[in-house]
Image (cartoon, rainbow, N blue to C red; front, side):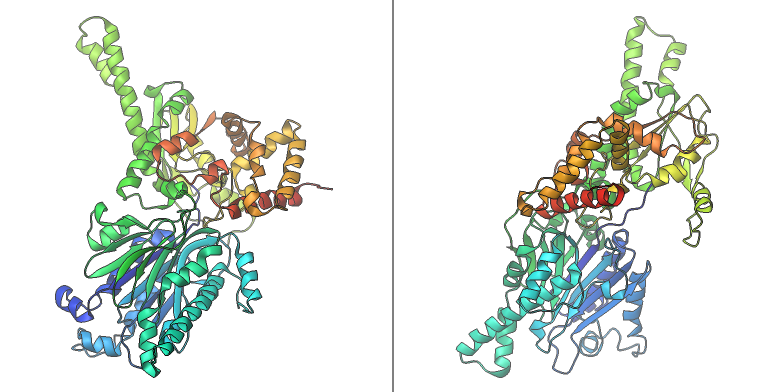
Length: 628
């Protein structure tokens, strides 16, 4: 029900054959360019604030451009950047456009290396200068670096201090630019190392250049650049001399998948993107492992290299629940399990009255979990029918069988997304009134005052849409009881690895817990937690514990749920409402291979996450409480 901004999307294509090969086999030398476009469009969900792409052309002569970049802002950025690229070809004679040799020599973006990026900002920083990829120029091809990524670093101030100690002066304070400068600095050192080696072998002039470009090891650059970063990331890059790389963080927080054959190397943030773009099976696509990098040399040699030792096993579970494409084979089954595992707690909420219960879902991203929920209830009703027949103790009549077998799981499309609020509406009462009409309902889908209404969502984060729109609009159906279900557990803690959930007060679960502490006279726990957080912040971050977890210990999930309902219930709505959340154990059973659950448990995979969570509580208390 609530739109979250989240981690970005990346796409890379490396052609392993000459452009003429693709012209002959596929009818166009734009094969790589077209595949990049498809991969970016298939990941459009991962970033709608901006997009960018870059291209490197191999084997150019001095005086000719070999590194190209295009960027744009807005939800139509993908079409805009590719439209700009293709605009370069409009004035070319029709007989020359399909000429691969002519394109290679004369046309921009006619190269062998392509890299694309889709951006969602989780820092609030806007403008074209923040849109990936970033470019660092130099007259030496091997020193040119183009960088993009799906990342958010928790210790950027430490890296910034390291750069300034070296005498550097970064132009912009952001993790993207600082990574570019740090990696560019290390790339310069790697080039210079090879320059010295070439001179020692007696090489001169362009022979030195060729030696450098043949012997640059991007693994050296990555090992000396990424060792100090704390965060979740997939970092992708191209050099002007034709090196390509993509590295995944050593905790495995952010995902990356790749495919290699004798024609192409491709990488994307999601597996089905590669499957659809290149017509592959699941088994054809490999997952990049934590701490490793996919490396492609300028000569096309491919390898997977260990850059950092794996430091954890914390693949993001929230990505599987909410962000990733549901068309992925494994994600589809995981989301169905999340729904089916909620059968028993929902049965308790409706007092096992399945005959008078209607099931639905909001929004569309919850649809797969909804199918799993239906499966769970169909199984329950099936077993219920068997038991009823066995309980008869005699051969049933047709009427008895009809009465038993006629019960089914009732599902309806009860709510429709109807309008989108425009930002020019700023006056509070007007905005709240209009917000209540964002969704419309299917009248007659629920028997008033007799049917329970169960509505599943993939997650409940802030509760704003529930309060301003969903509860009020569903109440117009006059259900006997409203059960609002989240396929994810209670979100209690901020994210610092690329999802737009950085402040504790955003979460309805946190606000409800703080309200319970006040109502029950437990302010001392609040102050103790505040002081404990401050004390932890004086320690080395590796030794810190997450003190914010302490505020939840006095309460059960059900107690917090009841308080959330009290806080979110709109004025005038008297229908009984119950919240049902997925359990953490249920999450782990449904998604066993993605163990990153810090949003729900407060167990951050990196020291930087723990530090920032403690700091978030200190900031909240100092903003909202007297702390003298």
